[in-house]
Every structure is written in structure tokens, then in C-alpha cells.
Image 1 (cartoon, one colour):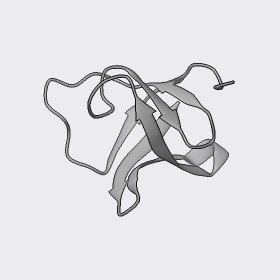
Image 2 (cartoon, rainbow, N blue to C red):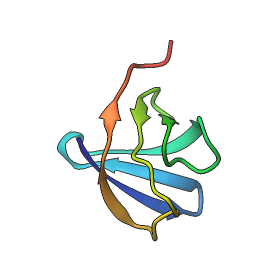
Image 3 (cartoon, rainbow, N blue to C red):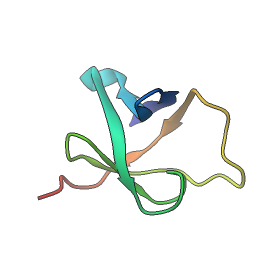
Length: 70
């Protein structure tokens, strides 16, 4: 799914346009959010694309939803 990633005063925020969903990243597999999973404040887990260098934000990328946290 296409998502937009941006920095906010609260932290890194992910916006999912098709769901009209804005959530803060609360945990990630790797430092930063690129190249592993990222957990959102609503419990969603997204598999994030990997970049050699962190991209400039805001950016629109393809991510895959994994599973809800229990």
C-alpha cells in the first residue's frame, strides 16, 4: 500500500490515504524505520522499504501491512 512518511513534533508519522489514517510510529525493528518493521500507535505493523541512506521527508513509499499487535 502507498503511505506517506513525515516528521512531526510528536515523532515520525505515517499517513495511509486509502484508510484516511494518521498514526505515530511507536516502535521499529531498526534504528530509524527503514528496512524492517515499524509499529504504529494503532497496533498496525508495516514492513518498510530499505534505503541505502535515509530519504528526505516527507516521502511516499510502498509498504506492506504485516499483522496487528496483540
